[in-house]
Image (cartoon, rainbow, N blue to C red):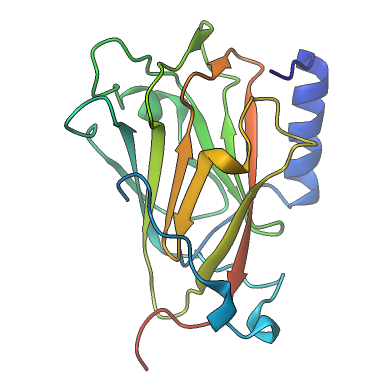
Length: 205
């Protein structure tokens, strides 16, 4: 697992937020093991780095574990620049399993870089997510006509400090899953996910 000093993590997070004009939105983007969007059916010329595809959409966050038969209660918010879910809000998403931790993670969006940040800096004590096929968080987005489709999600390894890689992610056009199975964390933890969109309307014209 990678370890980075508090200063390095906080400096990189501050830099990323400033360069991105302080966190922003998503736009068009379940249950674990979703099907990844087939980018072969999307015209590459439709992909625009300036397209904030989740802007104004409604996003739902739940905690899920494959070791239990249910999900947590959900949090719902409108996607906007900056902090979308506070640490106190996410802390209420108790694990469906009795032994799972419920860390206070801040969830933020960066409009300019089309990035999703999961910031553990408000975590009060370190812990580890349990072992399971899937142990983590799921984001569902209710797409609007102005939104686009999510094509890819990648971990920014230069900024992230948690032991999470591309194999821990699943997504489709309006859904992202982050599997923290077995991952240790403390207040220095940070995960930056870079999102790529196609400027293709998700709704019939």
